[in-house]
Length: 209
Image (cartoon, rainbow, N blue to C red; front, side):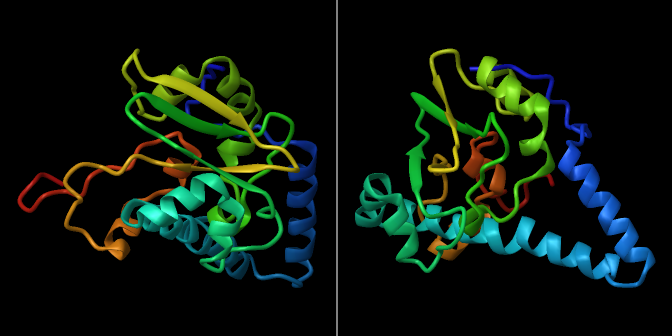
């Protein structure tokens, strides 16, 4: 679908972002909010709680064939069975990456995002360059993220809406056969569940950092 010069600067702010920042500045100056506490709260939902939920969903799908099939057939119910429900996650669809087919997610109109399983959307996901290029040149966008796929791998881009949000089930990396579900979940990243990156196999003892 698109290519975008997604060189991670993505500093383009929309009108709402500018208004929120202005309001945050005013409230901080008046002593109503603590910027440090706000940063901790945002980080918690953006990088810890939310993505960890999704990582557990993926890990369960990797180790439990019954759950895997349920997730692909009815992602909303399967995800809810693990306790992850709420606004922005009412209607979920799971798509699975394979060697032949790679999926990635975008929201071209705004930034619809599955909060219960991924937390808050990253800045780049909301940026105009990503939203436009992901549909026109997905292979180029993936390369910008360091994900270079063989030409034989088909790429499909899913456009989230207010009605449906998507979760990518990344490929399970080789060499993880003996790992526990908890260990597998620790490998899964937010970006891999959006489809912009792959899950990397754990480093072997003695390998370079």
